[in-house]
Image (cartoon, rainbow, N blue to C red; front, side, top):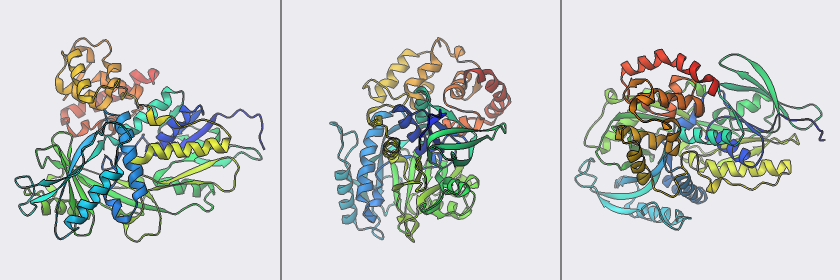
Length: 510
């Protein structure tokens, strides 16, 4: 039964991870008035705790998930095209270990990976796999031969933020640090009432929406359970993945993919110029996803993975930083965690005419396709005819007018020749063309405002608060950027002291 009630929104999306942000952006771009609600910061949980790869998932070939690999590899090309500032190609070296998978089997798998990854664009941007002599490299002498193939790296939390920025630029609304505490159908009428609570100030209220998407990630089932809307809902499997960061283990820009005795793989990836990122683990998780942290056993596992393969050994004392996230996987009943599907399932509430769509599973690489499919389903339910549009739409900062990233950087270095080249490169990598927003009118380094040390200026901080939804110092140092790894204690203390005043200064522009 329909009525003439004026809804606040056509669609309310709960969950500001990659799937929620992607769905909200897609929907708003099709003309649906959309609200994105997130209880923490954007990408505050799983979506900032990944291995930060846009890839097909070479190991998924072993579980015969050829469709998922093909889908992922096609999306790899699309995302590389649309966000070249935060996504770029990376070579992966796979040393052959005779105790693990046979040489011929790996060669066959890489041939299939190349075939499935045939580019949808005229010019192939990634190199094909190839055999490689590993002698003289950073690995132990026993690793004399192996393979090299290409995939892509991504700044994962920035990918989420860029989707939210585009959502707002197209007229949608974003509420962070705001929990959707309850969902209920409107009595005797179409649509939903979503009760909200601002977790920073405590204010409560509600909005109405014609449709709701539950993209709560690790909380997708608890959202349904709390609302009594869990009938026939799929099972969820929470799996913890942890990473460690250590001083750089090798000089090259290639990553290493190490086969482990238990059949898993561990990546060793060049990270933030002077570090190596090592991960990930796979551990069943039953606790509170907001309290997830690395365990000592996981540290041991990752340290031993490196020490089995690299000449240079590391120990716990070398761990500079670690992070953990909970992946919310669709429970397919598989006993081996590593073989649980990374594909996704879209589940509609069966008891109500108005759409309530819950998102299960998925991976960073396929978020755009998942989003497009989800919005297609919502539009069909609402009897709206709008086609998907995101395949060819650059994300904010990625509109580089066909220029490659290196050309873009050189152009900006010439234009802003009064600033340090390292600073310009960092701005270009993080913000792409959006760097011109906070550099507009800047003629000297002093025009960037107060310098807190270590290349951190007031202009960048203000931009992150005004345009990128940053509300805390942690948002800035660990999700919008990784400056937390680079700044001194003195710089941090200056930022901590000034941050409340900076936030107050920009609040009228947020």
